[in-house]
Image 1 (cartoon, rainbow, N blue to C red):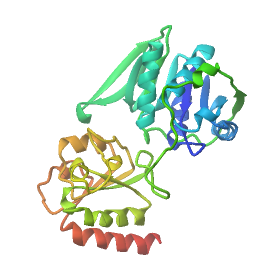
Image 2: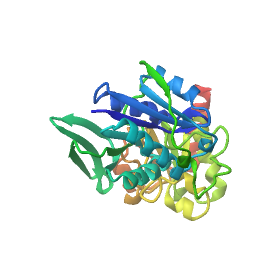
Image 3: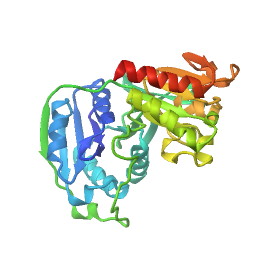
Length: 320
C-alpha cells in the first residue's frame, strides 16, 4: 500500500512527530511518499530524506509560511490526486487534527483519529485506538478503496526514524491552492525556550492543589530542572492561573510522554483521559485517597509545597 506522510513543520523544521510517522509508514512497507510544505521546502525535504522518508514532495510558496488549514488541505488534496496513496498519515496534534478532518471531508475518504497502532492484516488495514477515556481499546479495519484512508497517529507511540534514504521531488500545484479566505499574519507560541507539550518526553502538570497563580512558578521550576514541558488540569486553567494551551485532558490536549508528573492533581476522569497512556506517571498529592494514585506508577503522599522544591533542588544538583 502506498502511504503518504504529511510532514508538519515548525520554524521550517519538521516536528518530531513527523519522524515517528515515517517509522509507522515503514512498518507497513517501502512504498512511502512524504509531503512537506514551506516557504522554502528544500531544507526540510533534505532532512526528511536522510530519515528515510522515501520520495519527498517539496512544495514551496510564501503562502506556506504559517499554517493555514484551508491552503494546506487544498495543496495536499492536489498531491493526493497526483500520487494516489491508499493511506495518508498525519500527527494527532492540534494542527494535524484540524487539517485531517478538513482533508477527509474535502476528498470524501474515511478517517480514524488518535491511532496508537497500525498494521496490515491480510487485505485489511487495521488501526488500534483507545476509546471511552482509554478504558476500551478498539480495532478499526478497512479494506482497499478508491479513496485514501486518513489516519492521525498519537505522538510518542512510534520511535523516530533516524536514518534511511530517498529523493527530493520539487512539486508544483495550481495557484488557486494558495488562495484562502483567511490570512495568517503572525503565529504566537508558548515563548522562546519552552518545551512543546505535544512533543515532550517529560511533562510536569499543575492541579488545583497549587492553590493559586502565584504558585505556578513552583511547577515551572520543577519542569525547568528536568527539561520538561508544563501542563495543567482544567481547574487551573478555569481559575485563570495558567494558559489554556497547557491544559491536558478531555477538553485540552492528549499527551503521551515517557514521564508525567502530576502536582496537586486529584485525578478526575476528564484529566486522566488526556494522560493515562503516559509511560510512567508520578503523582504528588497530600490526599492518599486521591484517584490519581490509581493510575500512578509512583505516588508521593505529602505537601507539594515541601516536596516539589526538594525535588527541584535535587534534580538541579544531579542534572545540572
